[in-house]
Image (spheres, rainbow, N blue to C red):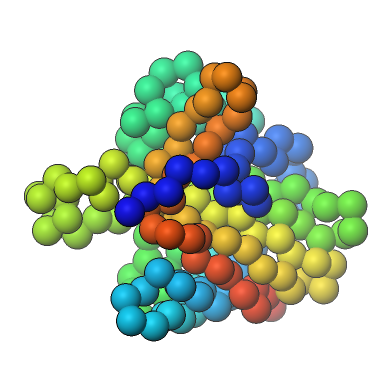
Amino acid sequence: MARSRRLAPIVAALALVASPVRAADNVLSLTAHALNLDSPGRSRTSTLQISFERWSTDEERKALLDTIVEKDPDALAGALQKMPKVGVIRTTRSLGWDIHYARMEETASGGMRIVFATDRPMNFREASNAGRSTDYDVTVSEIRLGPDGKGDGRLVPAAKVTYDREQRAIEIEDFGNSPVRLTLVTVDKK
């Protein structure tokens, strides 16, 4: 059952990370251990490989914000699909899924904060059944790395992103009970 709540680390995932990025920072590969506590029976872990080929532009960021705030938040997945690929996320046993939005900012400590989002892959059975889960059609994540290139993060694999006009805040509703925890996140050496 979905829980509507503000996920503090990624509450404004698409609205955050507005600072420009240096051209030299345009390629980054990460490895992370994903811990999913919502798995039936027991928690499940897997290794994720996340690579970024470039960072989303200010114009791309604005287009997504306009979709969420001014237009129809339900159109967010479609807006993401129309954006160019900026990276790929995959498990060690999968082909991967294109990432269509990613921003990075340097932190005061010398580390970095990365926020990314993309449309969520759905298998044929889920899409054809058109159940409630199809409303949660976006994947959103935030990763924080220290100056040593190590860190952690959270991933909401099935999210619904809306805008609360009263609070003037973007909200992320997770279809699961809790986000996937990303641990032992490390920058891959070239």
